[in-house]
Length: 370
Image 1: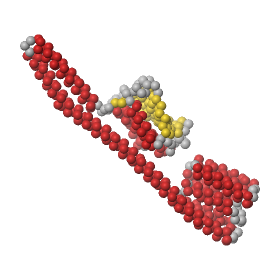
Image 2: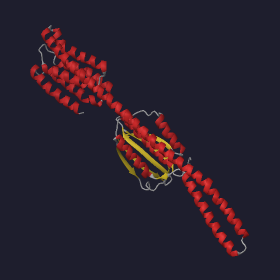
Image 3: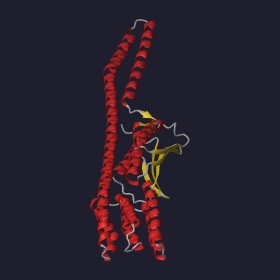
Image 4: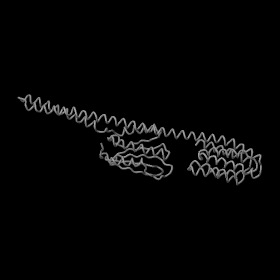
């Protein structure tokens, strides 16, 4: 946006000196107003509309200062348009646009057969065009490097998430292996010990020994129950609360340079979520923010968590839009909807006042998948 304002100031100064040389008339005043109005709204339009306006602006400029006298300040205005056009025209189109500017700039002198002026402007156009060529190549190279950097950054984040997911899977497998070993060895041995204690209690000659064997049996039985609980805990997926999800979101915010506002309604911090529910929430938010950066070019979003009637958990991701868009559910949104369906949840998308909101909701006591 700085380049736009600098270029606008340059155009205004050049226009003032051009008017000082050519004089001010009603025609120049009218066409100048139209010229600067179109130039001013260009950044607000889409690329295709901006290209059309940049084809009209040189025509207006030529109409304002169509004179057989050489006016260097008019040439400076053409130069400003050429510099700004680097962000709207690519490769061959940009070179055709430079030739288009040269033709309009030289046309009055061709028509009046002023070959000295034509030669002078041709030399200036050649030098300026060469400089603009290298400038355009530098801008294109920078944009290519930025795209490569963004691609590599996204791949790095994807690999990092895959490594974290792999580490979690390995840890869970190790826990399952430990649980199996405990169940197969310690559990079976405690069961055998219980049977032997019961046999010894039955064969005890007096009540005192029977009481002691009963006490030993109770201790062994308690140990067996605790072992079973430990095995059950090791085999089950971890559970957690919203704090773990927020930590992951904050980490993603720092990595992607986002500006996120997170709000939580009453009772949210006390919600206990299963591992599957936590992963579903995080993946849904991750997909929503990725779509935001990809399609709306926005880096600012609001995330809200709430309990609904003490039965459901609800999360909303909202971000601004430049204009209303048509929602086509691709792989990401479809996957998000399917993840929510697996925990008896649902997803909806709402557009209102240039704000896009993705809403996910599921019951806290929904079905669980091991």
